[in-house]
Length: 444
Image 1 (tube, rainbow, N blue to C red):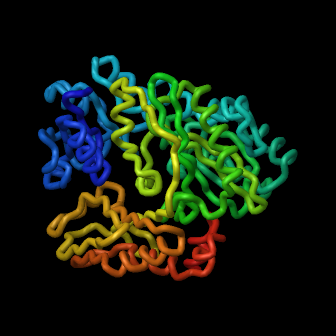
Image 2: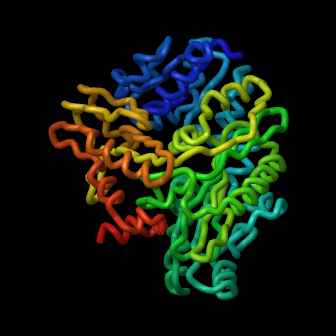
């Protein structure tokens, strides 16, 4: 087992990783920017190393600075969390070459799943359903031919994409000509890779992802699915497990194929295989994310498993001998963001009053505390409220109660707590009929 783990992240996921390490008897090293000097993860870790100015490019995304912290602290493993460098194969390779362990997939596997086109080829090989479209990167002339063949609307996607960047939906040839070069430039800026591919656009889909955990001995477990259809600008806001739209038969079928996909990749660690589900109930493979997800707690709540601890154990070479994975009850996660609930614009500021909800079936993952100044440089995620119920109805009722108890106050500080209350009162969500267009329609 590792003696000391460096947490190459910040915020609530850094706190989450520190807690998992502590339960395993592992010492931790927090890295932090100057803006995060008073952050909770810095206080909770056994050691802390400042890695630079507030800008992520000069701190959390600066590989030499993080590697210097690794060397100084003499940690023998790195936990990357989500975002920042978590899916960067170059970073994973540098960590491994240093003699430390990257707690995640092997660098070559990260590179393969990070290339959406290569990932689609592997998915096709194991029989995962694919959206009709290009199988290789395309230029505009080829994109026009493919769009004419499969029919509009189509979606342009970055081969190295993620986080909703490099994506354009187009409904006719004129729009395709206009948006193709814009998507290419955005992809080059965001990922240093301008390759694009084109797929048929699935109208009004649900977003469903399957959680996996795998060790380095070839054991792969599917922990069931989560629905993540409540989104704004391709960013998730509410997630739940299991999905109210997935039958037990379809769940078993996709879990088997997801496991085969991961084995074909030689995948280890936690990850998610993501799908779109159309209005007829057909599933289409979208991508794989080779990291822990923000929404992993809902799966933990219904399975009773600690996914972060399993990640660490797998990276340490332990064999994961999980009993038959069973899902009990229903869990919902609400991302509590420091943002205007109407415009979703970030709203950083000082937290002058903070009251966290509690009681049966309620969990809050956060790095916030009363007196904490939310910095303006990073993602607006402030906390994650997770509720569990014996069924979806009880989970929704518990979510309403917990949201009423949740208080975040500060001068000029806004949160999306009211937004979540509006969603839970909406008939479409209550009936489980919502799709990825729900937020856009609700906000009109």
